[in-house]
Image 1 (cartoon, rainbow, N blue to C red):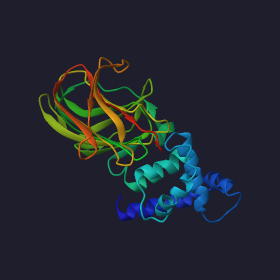
Image 2 (tube, one colour):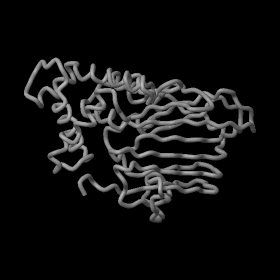
Image 3 (cartoon, helix red, strand yellow):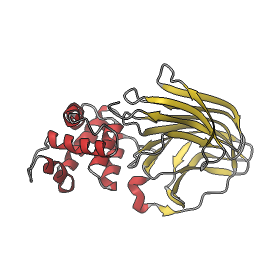
Length: 308
């Protein structure tokens, strides 16, 4: 994030941590109530307990609160604040959806053309996916894993061709713990729930397409998981797609022990085929498929637990 976004986000985070609903958490760790200034040690203790409870750091690491002091100092001082660190704060302090939404907007993660799903959960109405009126010509996915081992963001560049008149393209999510923005090709519609724990956002195309016309859309999802998802990234295809490029980028602070390129017969089936793959010089794994048709492909991995 740029300097202004960093400063604004850090200031808002400080303000929130002084509000009674959140201050009581770090105040309890220092045995002091009604403290009017932020206490770094108490905040570090809350973050450490959250990380221990969720397996993000080893429960045997008793020095973790002290190790977090520099990161917390930089975050609250407006010197450095990554999305992963901000997620630790919102999760550890169980921040309200509205407060999480405000912080996300300030970072620019849900900036122009963006929408927040989980942070607006109470406002998400039921909806119905529009009829399928397109085919995907090419697809490029980049899935990023953060320093806590959880999915951090996902960016897709996709060329779609209209089979009938087309003014929107729906994106479907299996989580509401996300923000979504369109980078190129259109703007976001309102999020809606489509049942079975799935949510969707329509990309409203800049220019409606006639049958046979094609356009490029690029969009990005930022994740805010409360419960760690399975360590995998998969792409399901319901028709033939040419030139599918998939990449998973791991953070250097939480590298996987092993990674497999896998294929599944269905989303709810075990892997039908797996091949061990190695990280490249950029700490990522990559595969290009000339064509896919009615299948599920992707990567799965095993991340070493902290302290091992």
